[in-house]
Amino acid sequence: MKRVLIAAPISEKFKKFLIEKNYELRYLGETIIEAELQATIVGIVTSNRLLLDKNNLQQYSALQWIARLGSGMEIIDTEYCTLHNIFFCSAPQGIANSVAEHTIGMLLGLIHRISSANNEIKAGKWIREPNRGIELENQVVGIIGYGHTGSAVAKKLAAFTNHILVYDKYKTGFSNTYLKETSLAELQEKASIISFHVPLKSDTFHYYNDAFCDAMQHNHILINTSRGAVANTDSILKGLEKGKISGACLDVLEEEKNIEKVLTETNNKVQQFYKYQVILTPHIAGYSLNAIEKMSQELLDQLKIIL
View 1 (tube, rainbow, N blue to C red):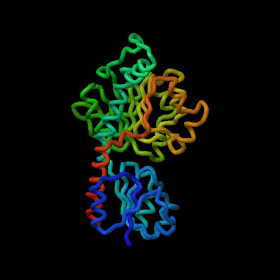
View 2: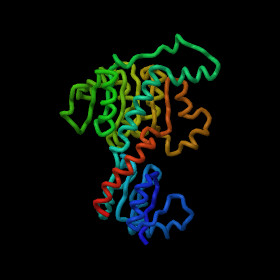
View 3: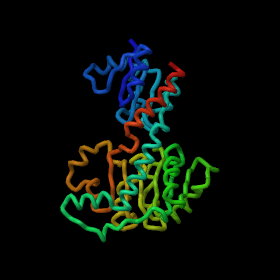
View 4: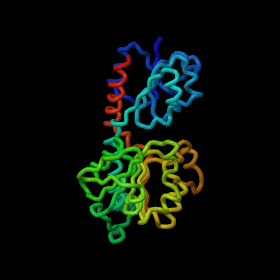
């Protein structure tokens, strides 16, 4: 029996394709003897819910392919897969528009104080003067990472401002009519808003840290919709306390792996954010209903080649 382990939400079309290929679909969390199931799994569709490091991959002795719903491959030991002829693919394009819209939405909500003003009205307060917004039109926005998502964010930002600086360590020659390719130093010198769109790797772990914050020449808004560990939580809180960070939009946090436990702790780091102008969302930027359909199709197109 060929079995596929489904550890992510996928479209009905994707499920139908797998069934037509004579795969039996099993879902993460089912009541079944784990070793018995693992030995019969030939394919895995996963997201952040399932870590596939070397130790875990070794348990799937019949594994032939892995489809990652989303973009970040840090949850999969790709070197192990390559050595053992396990095909792997991801769906970075499928989430790009959703993350870009979410990024812009959080930013506009923050600078126009939409969320905080709404909460004040819910509490019976009608406060106007302190809720004056800041227009995006004249702000210099710095984007770090010009992949599928970073480029989608830049394109949407162009409707609001023509002051967009982009730095990508691995790409050059992408300046166009609405953005300027720049160095990290120039971005830190000129930007008043900074948005991260990079994968989590050894060189992006704690990319935003105390030194990065200190290198920013302006008080700035920090946006992170990439991976939690890209931005050091303690550094963000320090920056907010000092006023160097004037606000933050965070869809991801370092504390996500233990978030249920963290949220039950008294005066936890997540609650400390709410002392400041911060908007938090629970890692849903790329989780729209449309994105699931798009990612499923993107993976489907790649799997059709090998199955």
